Length: 176
Image (cartoon, rainbow, N blue to C red; front, top):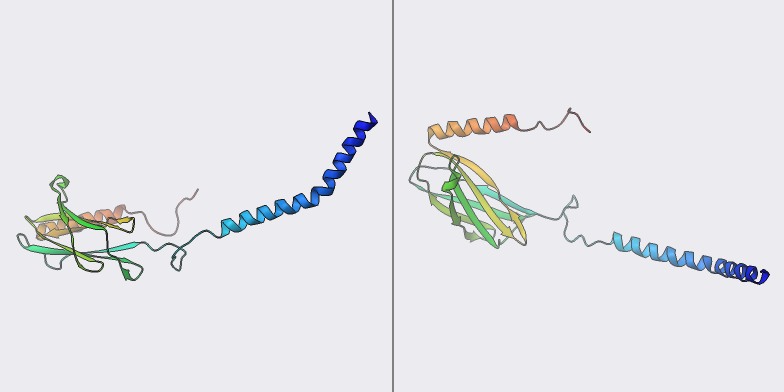
């Protein structure tokens, strides 16, 4: 029995001699893992640490009239640079009749600028949505616009109702 105890004692003593080396190896491996995690590829980031995103500025014509062709434009940028999009299309429809959608492929006018011409058939409130795909990113801005005096009043009422239903920003409220 003493022979077995000696083997156990010798084994423990041997493992204790190697313990500092094992600790050093484990510490090196943990350090390497931590450094690998801290060197994540960030690519281009803005001043807030966010990757630049597509910005789409959808522009409505200054003058709109029934039966006249209007030019709808948009500018696509990332940061301050124009972006040549992979695909740009506009979809228009009367606010109350989304099933009457008209889809139009946009034409490039300059790097990052796209437009489409469309003849508006009747007075009313319309929705225009642009679908932009560039560099594996998508943006889909939409705007409402009105043609005719009654439609302008209707649009103003819609926007006022939306603004009243929007949640208040800032102060107060119950937080969990």
